[in-house]
Image (cartoon, rainbow, N blue to C red):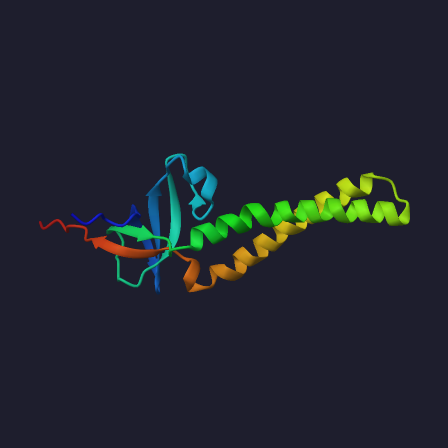
Length: 148
């Protein structure tokens, strides 16, 4: 028996050329991820690549490209943290060399931490245009049309 690949099932709400918005049920892990847009307590909307031709009302299974979630998670958490440490270390060196007060360590740490978040935000906006980071539709269950 072949194990079915992981993915989330959702309902297509709108379509545009090559893309679709899919309504997904919110799960406990969703609070920590950030790939989807939060719209309500029980659901969220996600823009996905629609290369399979899904239509509004179709039930679809979506997957995130392999390895992308790990890369995105690393960037979101580690870049600002590294910025914090670089800022604290820079403040430590500057306060020692220039005879400045020690609050420079905290100030530069916070500044570099915030710059890390700005960098991640800029990269996020840049990659939203790229196709490689968007989840994609991998399976479609067509909506049955009522006759009569």
